[in-house]
Length: 190
Image (cartoon, rainbow, N blue to C red; front, side):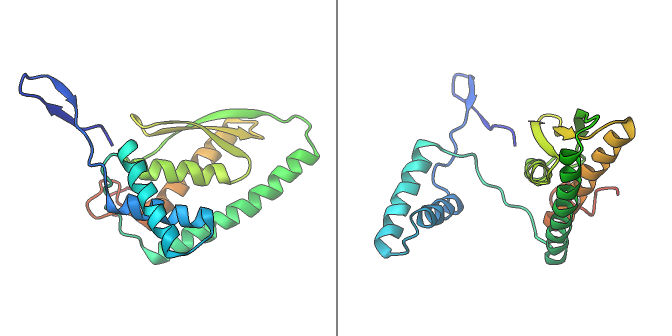
C-alpha cells in the first residue's frame, strides 16, 4: 500500500492525512484492551474504547481496505496443512539438533507472485512459525522475502524451500482471495 499524497494550492506535494478514527481499528484495539486486562465489565469496555481513540489519534493508521473474501474450506485446509508442516519440520529440526554434523545454513530469497501486502505478511509469518526458517527481511516494493533456513546443503534444497514458500502463498491466496484483488486465486497461474 503506497502512501497517499495531496497537492496543496501552491502546487506542493505532501502526504495526505489519514482518517484517524476507523471503526475496525477501534473495535480491535478495544478487544485487545479487554483481553489484556481479562476483565469484561462495562467500565473496562468504556476505558478501553477511550484508550483506543487516543491511540488512533496519536498514531493515525493508513486506511484499512478489507477486500478479501475468506473461503472456509480453503481456510481449513490452510490451517491443517500449516499444522502438518509444523509437526514435520519440528521432527526434522530435532534430527538436525541431535546430529549437528555438517550443518549448513543459507539465506534464501523468494519472490512472491501476489502484489498484496496482506499476503506478503501472512506468508512471512506462517513460514517463520514453521521451525527451521526465520524471515529476515520483507521488501514491499518487489514483494520479496528473505529467509534464514537451516540444513540447506545444495541448490536443490534451496529450490525445495522456495517451492514450499510459494505453495504456502498459493494456499493463502485460495483462503483469502478477493474478486477485485489482482492476486486473487482465480487470476494466479498455478
